[in-house]
Image (cartoon, rainbow, N blue to C red; front, side, top):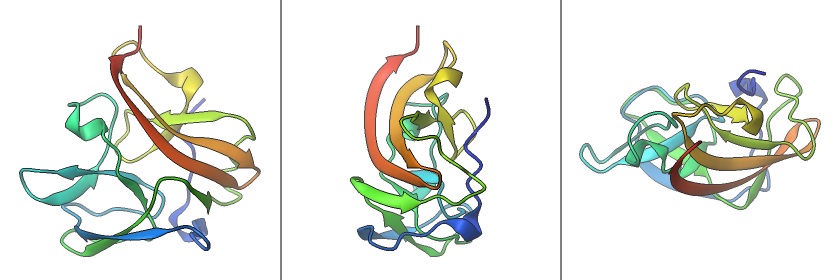
Length: 139
């Protein structure tokens, strides 16, 4: 399998609790997972094969922004519409990917990845976003 193909223009955060965030250090597309970089005091794309800090997902981007623009995040515990292109599978667990900002099915975890559960597929176009960090690396 591959990363969940979330298309920024299809992400709908209606009904989701949104959090205001400081600026993004890089361009971020709607639906991408971000972490807070304590050194730069900005948000960056999270990934599971980097540092522990890079794997601490604080939210998903509610819409796309360029570098140095303010960001709004979909908060944990929210349901978001990921879109028909993404087509999340009901009951599938999605983890933070090695590709910065992306989500992947749990079946795709590699032995060098940190295990970061991000969401569960609810329907053909919806995800329940509830990040759970484990500092453990997959066996």
